Length: 160
Image (cartoon, rainbow, N blue to C red):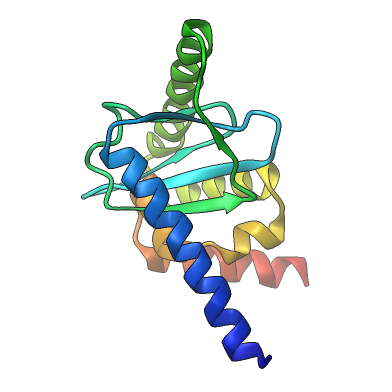
């Protein structure tokens, strides 16, 4: 099997998984991101993106306006079985939102870009963070994609 065909099959499988997640979200189902794995989900909304990390709730009434999603790491989702599990996942989602707000509160765009890149490299690893598009990081912290690209380029030059 050639690499192109193999890559197309992988992309089809990824798209199917994404479509399945979107279906759950649009049906207002509550899911929880596995708290025991380095994984998460970027939720693309009409004017911004949100990151829901390990332990966070997704779906229900939070994410009715989601346009698309991007799994980060080896995504694993489950259905919370008990009320305490649901409450805990809501609290964790709130913490992820608060963290994004803290990053976005910085008035200097380049610093916001640097912090979000550093955070993703810390939560996951450099390779995983480098696979995410500039546009995604830009939507997470309210900067232009060019700002993310500039910060990434500067970081690469410094690490050489």
